[in-house]
Image (cartoon, rainbow, N blue to C red):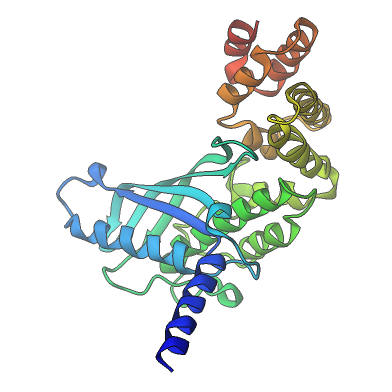
Amino acid sequence: MIKNSIFLTLFLALCAGVKGQEVQAKVTVVSTRVGTSVDKKIFQTLQTQLTNFINNRKWTSDAFQSQEKVECSFLLNIDKVVESNVYTASLTIQAARPVYNSSYQTALINFQDADLAFRYVEYQPVEFNESRVQGSDALASNLTATIAYYVYVMLGLDYDSFASKGGDAFFQRAQNIVNNAPESREITGWKAFDGRRNRYWLTENMMNSRYNIVHDVIYTYYRSGLDQMYENEQNARTQILEAINRLQAMNQENPNTMIVQFFMQGKSQELIKIFKKASPQEKVRAIDILQKLDVANAAKYKEEIK
């Protein structure tokens, strides 16, 4: 009986390890901008609660092994205290996935959301209900709704990187949050008229059939490109060049779409390393495409790939 009990305990522990949660997040709450007007212990409590909220929640119905978890970080930088327990902040989201046959992690998201207002009372439950996104307190719900939104976006991108349009279900769940987002005069980022680079436009672009090519680009870049670098570097580089070429074709037809800028954010150094070893002809083509896709880093591409 004792042996059976020990076996059962070990078996359940093993199952828990295999079916661990899908996201491994590091959450940091920075409060230097608010000075001494608030007890900083509150933000340490918030940091712990958000970490547990993300890492302990089951976000999908799939089983993830520990090495398959999406590694990510959330940096919540408190800008100011609006009133008692109400804050404005920026949220920086970074997420990566491993590249096959290597120890390299490639970026899925590198983005800053500058429009986050929320209410937090120390030790209050940090909860999220997909069927009731707004909750009874819009400002309190806004923080977890925003974080849940970006978790679904990163899962969508991760799944897209393994199968074209594989992340549709997660982009749909993110869009559901947009459609039912908390509303109050302090809350922004969920509406089309709140700007051109916000939560609304990101999922609009991902779900809009006009931009379907983006899903193929994501799959080609990661799965047919980066994941094949170890097996066949030349062919992998060709696939990546084809991916960015297709993205530029879409960009030319639909200038200034958020998803193009979102995809390119934080990829300049990775792309430079990829094409530094390319043939002279590929270098010329890559530089031409990248300078149009990522204008902010145009000079860097020309200088460092040549």
